[in-house]
Length: 164
Length: 164
Image 1 (cartoon, rainbow over the protein chains, first blue to last red):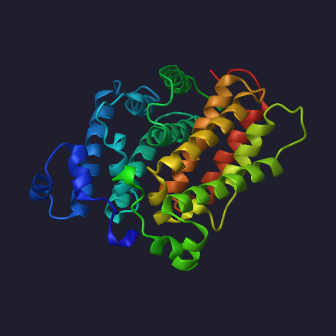
Image 2 (image 1 turned 45 degrees about the horizontal axis):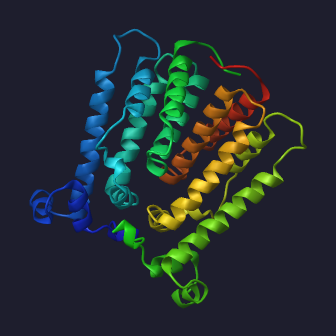
Image 3 (image 1 turned 120 degrees about the vertical axis):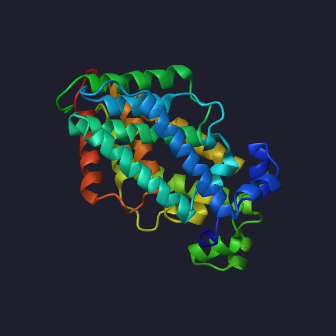
């Protein structure tokens, strides 16, 4: 079933995107192309956010801090805020390949950022955890808890050496 | 669409579970009941694993270490290893409610485990990140990387005080 494409109706996607089904199909020939387009656009948006948050060159941890700030930025109309879109995206090979490529790029950015490997790995894992939380518990976490995690992660980039 | 239930075919679930569709429907009257049953069974299994890994009472960090070990335990036939099951589970209210309840329980266990709040939060976030990785990149991470993260998290529970 998954190999045959996502089990989401274009009606549902069109409704959540606030456009007509005809409008969707005018731009995208197939459901897979639509989903690949959605994820491409989201990654472009996220990468642009990271770039805009990047400190001047030469500071250790600058890529990592930009990723932390971009991950915690509140997006009113984020792609992942729409449950039927998330459900549709998972399991689609074209989408999975794009997620893999982006994750590799982000991992390389934080791994070669001048931080101790323990700090780099822990922060990457924690940011993935915040992403899971956004997918499963969007809006259920307190702002206080999110800001406390964000500040802890930022501070971890400002010091050096092993954590244990 | 999501409100009406998961977009997975019972054929697909039956095929991945290695049983007949008739056998599935004999035990579960509705698709929602089947999915709620799957998640209940998985949580029981996970909680039993955590209990079995729990050190004797009185050691700070013992719940957290048990969660770390259970999260990193390799499960050959894990529920989350089946993409069509994962896709089906997300967005189903009965499942979401169970995930929320379990996450609350686990969070309470690690938050009242005698660890510094910075350590508790960072470890919880990192374990969520490992879960995201299991969902999106199952089998793509090296064993070496997983073990390195696991050992780092375990060591973080064995020391005390703030991290930053």
